Length: 578
Image (tube, rainbow, N blue to C red):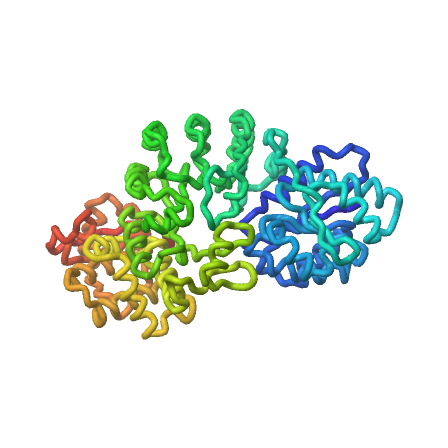
């Protein structure tokens, strides 16, 4: 019996921990002479549909199992509808949070889908495959719906159609209590032939979440279970020895148990290879004093944090079952050192959050100066408390995955779309860190949201949001905005012009300068500064990897507005491209 586990990832860089964990667990627990052949295939939502079908068909699998999420649900639906056309005798199943929490919906609409696995998949898949192999495939039977149903009804955690119509759920499966029984999902890292790549490796040291955020599926499973620290250390060592670039912990809330989570951080810091970045989703409000003190010792390029702020509106936070102690949250975030990249999240579309309230939440988060600000737009997920609330309170959301909110009683569709445009500009002008000096000055003097609101209106007038734009475009855009459209009296436009030029030259050596840029170049002064800095070992290379520029302020200072004087700077580049 051949079994193929299929994952459709968001991009080539991603890996799917779910199918890897299940496949490795089943492989480790099957009898050596079972005759079951297992394979994993990871595809992407951007691959041609026909290519994915061909790759799956080439496995000649008797059973194909899909891992489903909101971002790949539509792709998986189409694959399931076509896979039996080329593997006509195969059984097709699915699991994961999307199909698992909406099993009746998918079994009702997808006639080619034979069953859905609900909840944790390792033990369910092991039992199911063992029984199917023993009762059908070893006897060379054709998997009739009757025989198949006879097997399925004996396996906990499975939805299936009885008599081709009635949808049956066998029974809930008990959660895995001993997470140390799980096997490592990336065995290729242990081989001599593994080549370092740029993939993101996902890792879990715990399952479950003690919190009750109403929009989150994790709130359904409150049974928090942990791998032993010894098990975690041994698995982290594999990542470190393989020199992978990024390991993302998928623990729902990493910092639950201070003694445990700090010990893992200490292990990482003590054994760090200078190459691997570790990503954690944390509740910053609950960082202990010891944790904050330890973080002061963490150097750059070791850890990065994702913090779900979601809103600063206390009524909103209470409505979604989150702590409203935003003062403590802000205090702790400010104590996290800048050596740790911080990614803060906001969600648009939450209860009681109108546009005015969202503006306050936005400015609250930006006051913390995150390295990145991510907009989330509320997803109304099947199985969550938010689904019930939204259904009863005139929310409108997309019918199919990703179930994104279109309007709420507090925010109209046009306002939600306006925030979509703001999101684009936040990515360009904040998250990319290309305009750091310019935007820092602006945000020190006016409301960040007011700024983005204003440039968004200008962008819509120009049609700037109609297609993807290169960085050069956005420099020209911002120069034009401040020249013609700016209405903020607090801003010194001469200083902004200088800061914009400074940000522009910092992006890399230029072959030429655009018409908006006031290039004040003096080759002789360039040569003299190179000589003073001892950089004239190779004249050609020295000129190629530096730039000379004159500014009306010392833009290299922390507060350039206090240093208004003609300043010449020698900008050094590490290479031709930054």
